[in-house]
Image 1 (cartoon, helix red, strand yellow):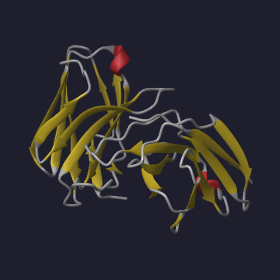
Image 2: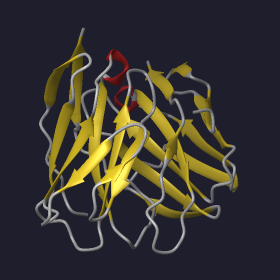
Image 3: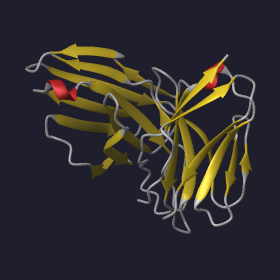
Image 4: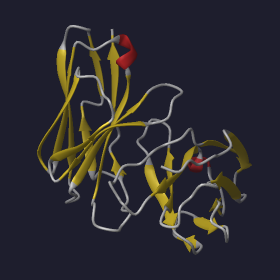
Amino acid sequence: ETGVTQTPRHLVMGMTNKKSLKCEQHLGHNAMYWYKQSAKKPLELMFVYNFKEQTENNSVPSRFSPECPNSSHLFLHLHTLQPEDSALYLCASSQVSSGRADTQYFGPGTRLTVL
Amino acid sequence: DAKTTQPNSMESNEEEPVHLPCNHSTISGTDYIHWYRQLPSQGPEYVIHGLTSNVNNRMASLAIAEDRKSSTLILHRATLRDAAVYYCILRGSSNTGKLIFGQGTTLQVKP
């Protein structure tokens, strides 16, 4: 499935660095999501955007800052991260419409390592 | 969100059918049952979903108990490429769009 792309695929950063993860969906969807997958743990939902508006923030620390400039692009800005933030960060998109449980399409993820 | 319970792991032989169970005893009448799977080093992918009736698609079949408190994902002939973590997820009709993942079932397929 190439409908959702993520860059970079791998990222190594120090705790004082600032970096950004990018997600792009080519499916014409109106909702986008960031998930975090740490080793041996289930995927955790971080943020939800519907029609470019953030509708959910699951108590994510402020060192993670999402940005959704349009319905096709989603960014996750990272600054002063901790080693425990090392994980696979997954982006997804879906078409949200009233009364329907639509499929989410995931990107391949960015493997982040914080030194 | 209603909770699901799945076995941590299962094994199957190649070319044989696999039945992956999921319990969801607190399911509400409007919750859809979704299945996703995550292959190694990839993001999750949709497999199938249903509400009350059994469902079939090219990837799998979904059998839903009459009381809807459990369901079973059926892979009719397992291949080595089916080795993955399989997630059973309930999604309500309020449809905020989010998915709540559990630990899932890790399926190993032996040649």
